[in-house]
Image (cartoon, rainbow, N blue to C red; front, side, top):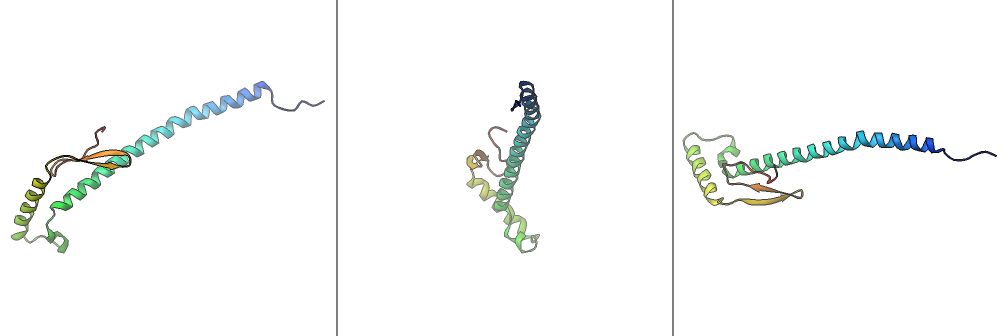
Length: 113
């Protein structure tokens, strides 16, 4: 009569190998996940800062450059107007996290960064 099945030793070896692979693999996956979330947050802040910069760009920038005489005065007026219009912090939900869009002239932040 033939014995069919696995011995206890064989099953224990397989369980040990699976445990070893999990011990090595899970921390790597969690580290990659954390790093990707951090990178996404940094990119979101850069995107918000670019959008805020667009608010204060003179229209002449889109037409090929700033006119030296009128461009600076127009730019100064736009910066002043935008800074007056943004007086408080605004929160924006991005990917389940809240990003705080601070007034122009200060950097956007995440509360937990």
